[in-house]
Figure: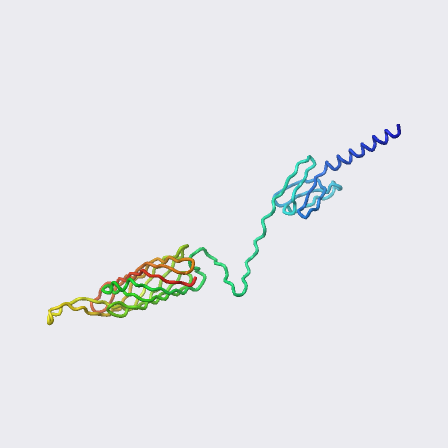
Length: 250
């Protein structure tokens, strides 16, 4: 009889222990440790709980990023996703170039140097056009050009100052300039009864406009024009087309 009573008492004690374990919440942390608790509140950033062995005690708070899962007393489990890794700030080491700060083809935060060659102007000498080499300097939205060349009638040179609007594949520019140009014109020589081509030079000023398509390597293709007026012997309009290829430091 006594043996039966002891056996029943032991079973009741074991059942009470099982119930006690089942009645608690288990907070499983990412480092592998387990907290026996009674969870009171769950948010996206933190978990609030009381210690299971001190339910009348204070409420503890733990970051949700440290929690792998919670196994509740009813048998259900809630898991928490891995937090996104923190973005490390970029540090530039010696000998490396800082990352581009814009999405444009030419970085407006850097000094720009470019060189290009225009060939089509040579075909229009009577309009004051000319072919030659162009040097470009600038920073931000400012751009200046030094054009040196000529046509079949002499020297052509001018300087322009432009505003440059940066884009993802290049940029549009608009400005003005001045310089000198050479013209050719026909006239009739009565003494020899024949037409003669004469070359004259004139001071010119006008507008400079166009668009530049820039590749990833800095090679660019440019199309535009200089349109103005030449002041000198036989004043006339100046038209210098621009279809050129060049390279720019980006």
